[in-house]
Image (cartoon, rainbow, N blue to C red; front, side, top):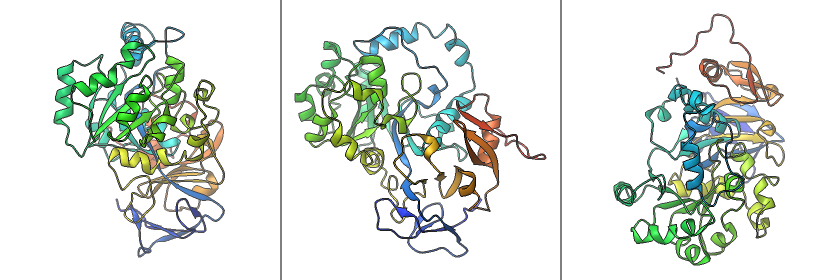
Length: 396
């Protein structure tokens, strides 16, 4: 189905001088023939956020830990694996893969994160046209130095094309084991221009000084680090040594919410920092947009320049909650928004919904998929579909 071209007038376009925004499924340089003109005066348009680390099929699990604090995440992983056949995990594991992945995608869409890097096997369902968000397709990964053998890590790294990012959980802890992982990875020959380290909590200043200018980037997952370890990476040193970093939400199995909450000033991580977060908070948009796009190797994301993906969301003030977003657009198509804003797009059929108690309108096609899913997104209620409407086939 062709995307209705849009001409957006009146809004402030973040990162640009105030101007009109022209879109189809991508940002256009000039208005398209037959474009619908929409007045969004008084609002600010941001490019869709980029979540640089999630496990999309794990977001229906409750936040879980079995000790007050872990010395490293490997301990948590062993604790978790020992309980997979107990409740509630046993039952939650039985849900269809599509439903589990869909809930992870929906979680991201609702907070304005229209692109996600999935750190797990590249399930083909992630690239279906009806998946809620864009998912990075060209990447390599290893889980960690604990749950993979050295041979597996090396094989994965060498098999990943040099222009693709290669992700690994690393130094996720506070003990000597975690502190030695960067040097171990370097010894394995897996530190290079496409390496992306996730977490990096135990990296020493010497490690950071070596890695920051050499690797593709670091992914910071603040609430997971605070929850499991009571400590997080020295992002201040990472930036000081010239490194790029991006935010990752991780999954709800360990994180406190979604990507937007990861960057909120009230995030629990700011209570445990041993450095000032002020410089990070002042430039917090960069690791959520263009800097994350650089790490993922996707120049068409994280900006609203000509030919960028037409992924954007609408706000009118500083925000850190998904209810404060007035509209989310993916690929030039409005997906969910305030009723009065969605009404500005008469070509979109919508259904009433509430998000964390706030009234919304949601695209009919997305509503179909939500109703079809056997799992439910916490805080989201979607009205029944209009009579005569049928669900899409799960074959898509």
